[in-house]
Image 1 (spheres, rainbow, N blue to C red):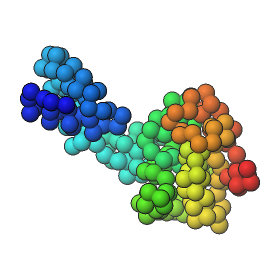
Image 2: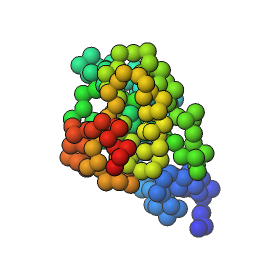
Image 3: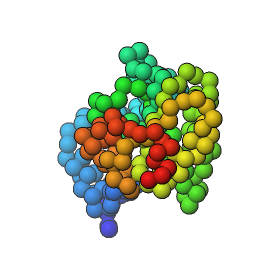
Length: 205
């Protein structure tokens, strides 16, 4: 693809690094931005800079937040004794959209995947284990994707805390095996939260 402008080429190259964006789509988006009022593009640029410079991870659950504690963890109306373990921030958003969960979250930041070189030490697992050991947690809900990596991660955490007196559940398999949580419709996901089952039962299915 030949460009008449180095500035245009640089913008397209950067835009094409986004997931699912090829060179042609990147060019279309960049040209669209060029045709918009300058203020609109400047506001977009500023919002991205502000995001990079100002975003935090909640010190309690690792969710994305503007402050040290995210809005969920700092909400006194939430049940902080029930923790829903999820892979990433998108899963928090998916479950929150169902309106069926009133506890708090713990974002692992991924799943155990030896083939990708991701082990327990690369994830926020140790802080979860410490939380279960030191705080008055009544229930831990595994809400990872129904994939081999998700099941492996669930089982690893289960083995670390199985001697601690705590209720451990997993979302019901209304979520199809192999599906990522973020792509599950709100009704199915909401029902799977409500109808969660003891984790030990899921080991036999």
